[in-house]
Every structure is written in C-alpha cells, then in structure tokens.
Image (tube, rainbow, N blue to C red; front, side):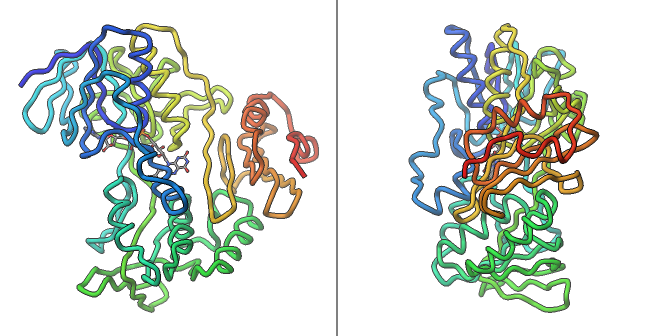
Length: 395
Ligand SMILES: Cc1cc2nc3c(=O)[nH]c(=O)nc-3n(C[C@H](O)[C@H](O)[C@H](O)COP(=O)(O)OP(=O)(O)OC[C@H]3O[C@@H](n4cnc5c(N)ncnc54)[C@H](O)[C@@H]3O)c2cc1C
C-alpha cells in the first residue's frame, strides 16, 4: 500500500507527538503521517519509573495526539529511507511518501549478554511486566546505579519489594554527583531498606522457573524473583545511518533548525545531536524536556517557520522523597562547587570547567532552571569562590 503525506514522522514517542502538534498549529491543512513500532500511541515515559509507583494514574500518561489530526500507524516499523524518492519503506511492505520527514526514533535499552527474560524498562509494556512482578515482598534485583536504575530501585522499595541494587561504581550516581552527595544518597537508600551492593556487577545469570539466579563479580550468587536493568540506551540511528545521514555523539547530527545533512529530513529527541551554543558544542541528551521542545521546534521548522532551537534542556528525577532538576553537563570529573542549605537535602551544585559553568544541579531547589541556564550561558570566567552563591537557595 502507498501512503502520501506532507509531513511524515517516524517514531510515535514524545518528540514525534510534540512535532505533530507544532505542525498542526502552524499548518492547518497539511497531512501528517506518524509511524510507531510500539502498540501504543505516544505517552510520557518518566512516570513509568516514578509517578506510577506512587500516586500517579496510568490514564494520565497518554499524550493528546488526537488534537494533531495525524494518521497514526502503530505496530509498524520504518525500515529504510529512499532519500531521492522521498519515500520510507516499512516492515509491512508499505511505502510512505513525504515532503518533510522527522526521525524521532529515540533509543533502545542496552542489554546484558545473558539473562533472557530480564526487564529493561523503556516502554509501557516493560512497565506492565515490572508492575505484575513487583508485589510486596518480591525479591527484585536492579542492575545499574545511574538515573533509571536508582529510580527503579526507589520505586521497588516504596512498593514493599526486597530490593537489591548492583552497580560497578562506589556509590549511586557517582558519575554525576560530587562524591559526598553520591555517598549520602547511597546511605539514604540503605536507610530506606535497599540492599545496595556498590562495586558489584552481575557477570552472568539466567531466568528459571523460580525467578532468576545472578552470578556476581565477587563470586557469590543472588536469587531474585525478577531482574530489572537500567544500563542506558543506544540511540536508534540505523535508519539515518543506512540513508547516509551525518551522525555525531552517537546520534543524528542536526543544525539549529533540527535539520539533518538532508534538508528535507529532520531529527529530534533522544536520537538527535544538536548544537548547544551555551556549552560551545553539539550535545545529545536523553531528557523529556529536550524531546518536547526539540520536537516542537522541528515541527515548526518543517512547516517553513524560522524556529531555531537554542534551548538548553533540563532534566529531573525523583529518588524516594529527594528530587532535583538539572541543566547542562553533570559530570563528577569536572570541578564541583557545593552550596548547601541542608547538607545533601537542599542546595545547588555547580560544575565548572575552564572558567565556565557547564552544569547546575538544583537539589530539592525549585524555580531556578532559567537562572541556571543563564549562568551556563554567561562567559565568566568563574572560579569556585565567584560562582558560590550565584543562585539563591531557599532556606
Ligand atoms: C523509565 C524512564 C524514565 C525517565 N525519566 C525521565 C526523567 O525523570 N526526566 C527526564 O528528563 N527524562 C526521563 N526519561 C527520558 C525521556 O522519557 C526521554 O528522553 C524521551 O522519552 C525521549 O523521547 P523521544 O521521542 O526522543 O524517544 P522515545 O520516547 O523513545 O520515542 C521513540 C519512539 O520511536 C519508536 N521507533 C524507533 N524506531 C522506529 C522505527 N524505525 N519505526 C517506527 N518507530 C520507531 C520507538 O519504539 C519509540 O516508541 C525517562 C525515560 C524512561 C524510559
């Protein structure tokens, strides 16, 4: 079957949905087609590891895609792009002609080379599997101590599961937070009942009829009813790569108009590497805010509007009752300057590099994202002494 659209969006996720809404807002008549390989229409992913384990409702995660009056084809995977013919081929043998194409294909969880049956939390279906397994008292092994792993471990513990966390570093979030904060978070997880095994990885394991058995790097074994891993994602660049589009930072390279090296093809969200003038480099981030705003700008640019993307996206997370927002680069290898109202409970961490502020962590500190962005954009030069106190901290 042949389909013909003015605008074609591959990927029915957050960036794709935001683009569809922006296109519809700017072009009332244009036809919009959307291909998504999941069985579900676009939804918010962050609640899958946070709100839905507290008081959040599943009904609230769905995006209002109907408003965009797009034709949404679910359960269908785009396989190849014929750039010369402006046609996408899908896995059912259909062709999708476009004038402008958006690649909003997100990423796929990194997996372990063993342990078929382990859960990698990325989709609503993954969440449903974990939800079915996470009964009070269930033994849940969480592999990974980064953003997703630490959120999942907190969610499991909140829901009464016997939770064990495994990761190679010496503390939760050690790659992102200053050492003392990472150590305090790790202590807090232990206080909340999580068996945190820092410096320990799973080197093997398999699911069996009675759950799963993991072989650990210290030579011991760990039995669990369910194993769930958060090991990061690999951006879905296969379509772009096969079509010869320029790649960067592991993603699809775009300019400030979210245009790839082919002027009729755009990219947005987790898969796109975009120029961030405030950081003086191209970056690729995996943030909800970036997917929403990049999708919106890409949609506008696809309609011919001049809507350059110059935002520095922010990220947020919830770990038990600790929460934060963050902007820029959170890399513990940079010089970090901590400004606490209450140590490790409320404050700001600045990440410095070459006299510039490259990142700001707003720990239980709210309403400062724009001020943090302005600080990162400021030429400086800054030192630990001059940056401290730049952002007000309630207290
Ligand atoms: C559990 C979880 C918690 C998170 N928490 C936070 C948080 O607290 N804060 C935050 O800022 N961010 C968070 N994120 C990250 C945030 O959800 C992502 O940055 C955002 O969803 C990216 O949107 P996207 O549209 O780029 O990609 P996705 O949401 O991954 O959507 C891409 C879609 O494209 C589909 N697709 C891929 N290839 C094809 C193809 N060839 N054909 C058809 N369809 C295809 C995929 O299956 C997917 O449905 C979280 C993510 C997860 C998984």
